[in-house]
Image (cartoon, rainbow, N blue to C red; front, side, top):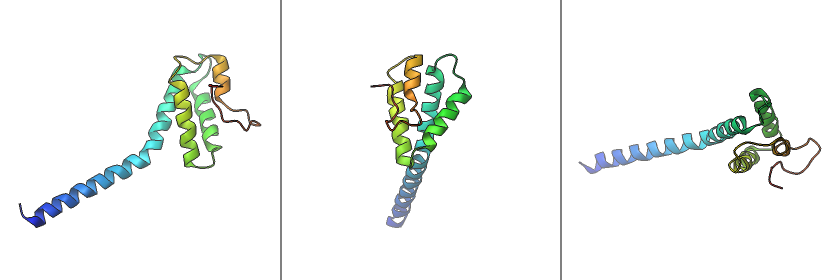
Length: 109
């Protein structure tokens, strides 16, 4: 293999790696959100519907000032959910902040 051909192969690998990194970076927030949403649906009290969960999660994430804050919120909820099999009514209520509350939501107090 000539030096030119090796260089072309190396450039191709670098381009592929850069494209894979870009795709992963853009899709990571959507994947985290999907996983958190599905975990909420699975662990929510029985009388809470899927649409209600999606609506509340949308409202919570829209209230975040930027993408970084949304990711922090999703990761915090994910950490809270990994410790429980099913949320009690009290844990469910504490998961969502009250509109007038400045405290971040969470079930670990």
